Image 1 (cartoon, one colour):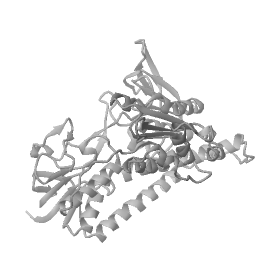
Image 2 (tube, helix red, strand yellow):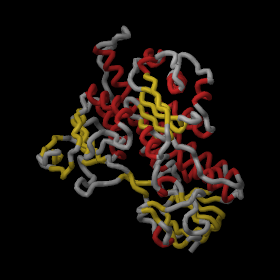
Image 3 (cartoon, rainbow, N blue to C red):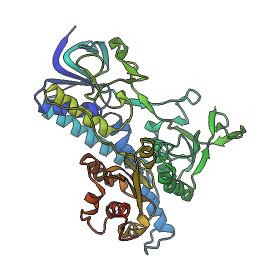
Length: 460
C-alpha cells in the first residue's frame, strides 16, 4: 500500500480546514488536505453562500413585483416573471468561482489536496482510497450535517436545505419544519419567490435562541408576507397519498396541512460519524469533539476545529480556529479566546447578536445600562424604505464597558464587524459616542444607541 508522509494532515476542506491549510502553507508547513466532496464545504457549496444568493434573487423578484403593483417611489414596471433555472445557474456560478479560488489559493501555498473519503487508522495515520497518509499533526475539520427527523425521512417531497437551494421549480405550497435561522431564511426567500409558505415550530415563538424584542420585526415581516405560523405544533409525519403534513396543536388536536414540499430545518449536528473517529477514543461532548482553548483534543497533536467541536457552529469561528492551529503548529503562541463571535440571521429584516444580551448580562450578575435606537429615526433607513428594527447596546453601569450589541434591521449584518471590533478592543460607551460616524448611514444608529445609554441621544 502506498504511503505519503506530511507534517500536517487536515480532514475536511470547509472554511476551517482550507483556511488552516492556506495559513500552514504560508508558514512553510508541509500540508495535505483531504476532502471527499467539493472544496469549501457546506458553507461555500450548500450553505452560507448559495443561501445568500437565493435570498438576493428572492428579494429582487419581490421588489420588482412590488413596483408592478404599487410604489411610493414613483416607479412602475410590468409584472415580473421568474426563470428559476437561470437563477440557480447564477447562484452556481458564484459558488464555482469561490471554490475555484479556494483551489487556486491552496495550490499557490503548496498544499497537496487529495479528493477522497478519509478513514482514521490512528492518531498519526489516515487511509484514503488505499493511500496511507502519515502525519505529525492531525487536524479534524469535518464540519456538520443537517439533523434529520426519523418521522420525515428525506426523499420526494421531503427536502433538506441542500435541495431547497437548488430548486427545479417553486412549489405552490412549502411547509418549513423549524423556525430557526435556516428555516426562516429559506422560508422567507421562497415566499418572496411566489410560494405559499407555512412554518411549523414546536416552541412558542420564532428564533427561540433570541429574545422576543429582537425577533418581533421578523415576526411582523412574516405576517406582512402572509407566511402562516404554527407555533407549539408538533410534527407527527407526512402522508404521501394526501400530500399532507400531520401535526398536533397545543390542545392535542391533529391537523393535516397540505404541502407540495416539506423543508426539514431543525438544526445541525457535528459530523462525527462514518470516518472511524471512534478509533481515537477522544474525549467528547455528546457528538462534538471536546477541545481546549488551543483547539487541542485529548490526544496529543490531534486538533479539532469548527462545527465538529460544537457550538457556535459558524464559518467565521472555524476560520479563526484554523488559522490559529496552523500558527500553533508553526511554534507561535496563540489561544482561541475571542471576547465575542457575531451571530447573524439573514432573515427579513436581518438580525445580529454580538456579546451579551440584556438577559445574559443579568444572569451573570452584571449591572448594565441598556439602550436602543430605532431605525425609524435614522435618515438612511428611511431612504432605504427600511424603518423597522433598532440597534441595542449593553454596557456595564460602573465603567461603561460595552459587553454586547444587538441589532435587527435591513443590512445590519454589515454592522456586525463594528460590533465585534468594539468588544475586542474593550470600547466604552464614551469611545463610540466620541467617534464621528458618517452621515447618512445605518451606522449612525450605533452612535445614537451609545449616546442614549449615556443619557443624551441627539435624534430621539
